[in-house]
Amino acid sequence: MGSSRVVPSLQAGEETGVRTSGLTNAPPSTVTVSRDSAGRWFVSLLCQSTVAALPPTGAAVGIDAGLDHLLTLSTGEKFSNPRHERCDRVRLAKAQRRLARKTRGSANRERARVAIARIHARISDRRRDHMHKITTRLVRENQTLVIEDLTVRNMVKNRKLARAISDAAWREFRNMLEYKADWYGRDLIVVDRWYPSSKVCSECGALTESMPLRVRSWTCSCGVSHDRDINAAKNLVAAGLAVTACGAGVRPQRSTPGGRSATKQENSTAKSGIPAQ
Image 1 (cartoon, rainbow, N blue to C red):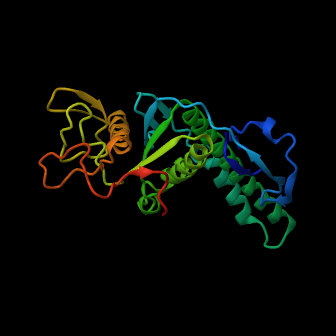
Image 2 (cartoon, one colour):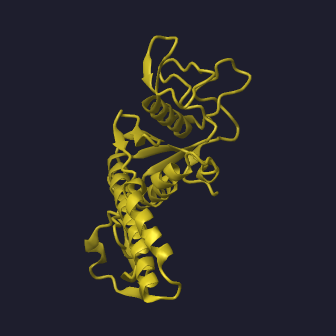
Image 3 (cartoon, rainbow, N blue to C red):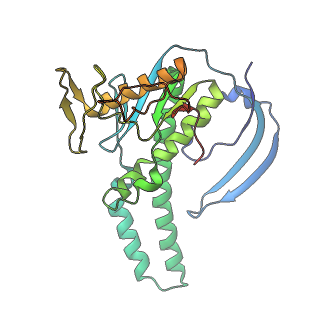
């Protein structure tokens, strides 16, 4: 039996994967009509419905977030980064220049403002739609999903990467995985942000001391060649499964030369669910 959930209405570009047949006879408890800054109208219906859990599957996947590729899975599959904001950056700049030339308080300035808001809405809708399609597929195909605890709030302080990180929307991706995993009875494991997933060999467990961001592939001393992102995703899923199996942590002991991919600790540094920020 599925648990009872409050299912919000869908807005532009949103796809949650909820079975609409369960909402057919659900009377709305609240109906809200709203208008956004781009002049678009929305009707939100708040209904009480039951979301049935998906059939269990033994599949587990590690997910490594990046910029060159939006996501890399432990299976070797990579999702390209659409870079929605960059695609509309020239159009947005032109619209902002037109706005700057308009007289304050004039009707022409208001029309120019709405034009800018529509470009921002287009970027946001396309990004949200892409994220919904990816997260829905991952939740449907895998019982256990392992991600890394990225501190996006601190990462965007890097002025060279802030725009690209914001466009990738890693935080939105994590939020979607959280509630969809909760809806459909999946396990979401978050690995500690300090776990060196990119530096550890997924074959022998050897820890490399230094791994600059410019290094995209490397060869371990054991002779195995690694793609940086795929290797990180494999380490994440291994660490996540170790947590669920025996409660092992995922931070290597500093006193252990080379470290280990998972060590027994009293307080696990990876846990099921999304930790509060």
